[in-house]
Image 1 (cartoon, rainbow, N blue to C red):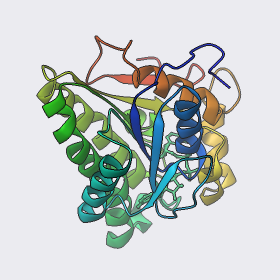
Image 2 (cartoon, protein in one colour):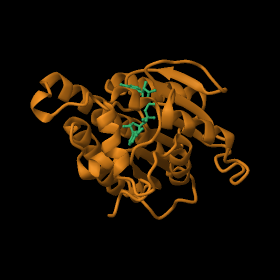
Image 3 (cartoon, helix red, strand yellow):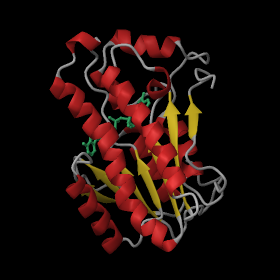
Length: 244
Ligand code: NAD
């Protein structure tokens, strides 16, 4: 889908998509490629597919992230587009039952991981004077979902670090934005209770979940050259749930 509207929007560009083996990251990688980009994914599993360069690594380990960025730049060329979609929901738990380890696990992947990837990719982008970074936050980061304190906090961190890094890089040609989706139908939901999913769907005025392709369409606009006067911003994609 997509390239009938935006032929070759990413022609000549190199894109790295974390979490690109599944869900939103996978749909984004496919669309970037359909529109002309050379695409690499960084995910826990490296299953080569669709002509993408699949790199295995854990975003919560900065050494994995740095070596993935080096490998992609060596094999595909300088990275123009970074999409940070790797993330975990964490266990659906009331606050009083969240262990230290569970808190740290969710923050390490969802918040530290996005920071490590932004830092690693932004270095070369700033030197070259061009880059687009899109971080995947969540409506939970704006509102705070019950049964999801660690997840909500990690996504608020993504929103805040996007604002800060966007300002740090504002005059370099590197634009850094994030998106805040409401519930989207992907394998991530397998880890949640039905009550947790119902809570999220009930709050969506359009009365349904989003699709990974709908989210990829927004990410790809923020990742393209035409997006030129937005940085540090949070874009909602929520079927009407977000009101500010
Ligand atoms: P998904 O589970 O389908 O995909 C997430 C991918 O991240 C998986 O391929 C997984 O292997 C990878 N990943 C997890 N931990 C990793 C690590 N430490 N290092 C590298 N890769 C890792 O889920 P999705 O719904 O496509 O989620 C993508 C992003 O969107 C996540 O950040 C998620 O929090 C966010 N999000 C999802 C929803 C939703 O309802 N699906 C809503 C808002 C935000």
